[in-house]
Structures are given as structure tokens and as C-alpha cells.
Length: 100
Image (cartoon, rainbow, N blue to C red; front, top):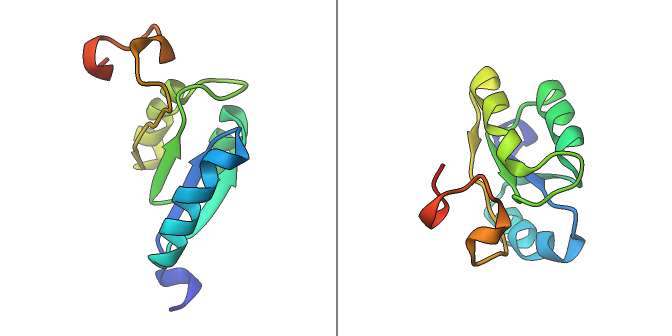
């Protein structure tokens, strides 16, 4: 399958260990993974090379994953925010059940 036909996914996570499983799984599904380690770099990367999907962690350096959705509207991206935190302490801006 050519590079142009592959789904481009930007994964935003500062801990390399947490990117291994989703990266390997999605590569096996013929996705092109584009990892970055912080929110500011993610925003710049999305501007330069818009992916079809962005998977940011909530707690990332230089801005949190919750600051990325406004940029998704500009570039018409889908963002699925992920976190290893099971409780609401992951971000005080989230309400019950992780809703804004």
C-alpha cells in the first residue's frame, strides 16, 4: 500500500513506553504513525503536515492535550484524547466522566 493511501496518525505522548503498544497496533493496520513528544511541537506538526487523526495524552509538556482541539477545527482533524489516569485528577478542566 502506498504512503498516500495510509492513514496518518499523530500520536502526542512524552513517555516513549506509552507509545509502543498503539504504534505497533496501528502500524499493523497499515497506519503511518507520526509521534511527537509535546503539545507545542504537535500543533506545529499538524500545521505543516495535517494527519487524519491526532491521539494526544492529556498530560504532555508545553501545553496539555486539551489545548489541541481548537486547532483541530482549523485543520478539520479528528482528535481522540487519551490518558493513563483513571481519575479526574488528570485534568482539573474535565468534569465528571472526563467531559468538558
